[in-house]
Length: 128
Image (cartoon, rainbow, N blue to C red; front, side, top):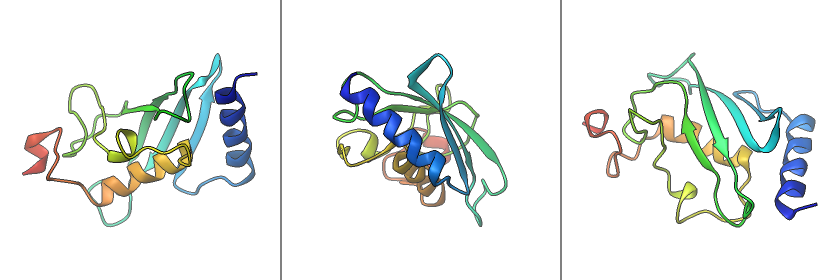
């Protein structure tokens, strides 16, 4: 069994054992390489009480390289591309480490909703 599949199965077991209150995260039925996440918008933000769907794609090099994550649900946010839902988040690019998990990456996205990085917008209109 590939290292990435072992890692993803371990992450899934941990999620089942210790689920998150503001997030549901699971692999798609046909492959453990693609996951879905549903995250709840953080309190005291314009996203409060909203649910957002994310698509997550891992590669055979996971966890050595970051997953590709994007919003499926439309969202107006400076760090989310308004057309394709791609997310500008340093841990999904140059700051990725194999110590990160899909759970931690989703929690970082929730944190980004609370604290946008307006200095590196993908959606310039939302950054203003």
